[in-house]
Length: 130
Image (cartoon, rainbow, N blue to C red; front, side, top):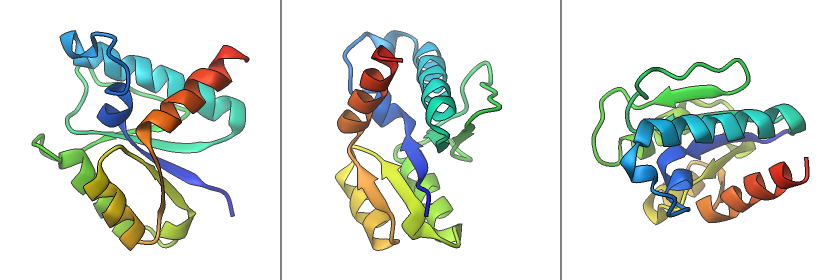
């Protein structure tokens, strides 16, 4: 069974203090670009979820770029859980987050979890050698 990835976007962005907070939309675009390269190289099925829609919107033909219906605290977490509950095979989903509450809920829905820091290192390492 192949793994499908549900990525808590701002958690992964927040793993590096690279001044991302000065331009969140640019940081979102950088993450989507990195995820596209990683997904294309490895044939990965990736959905990145943000708490709000990027502005301007980010479109991708390689990964799904999603956001919560209404921006608020933990909105991306709620959207990730909503997607897991609607998934016919949540055991094939790996959630990427540094949020303990979301990780516990994802485990409860049958998904596996990878920490945002570890995932960011995976992205960085694979792109460094490609």
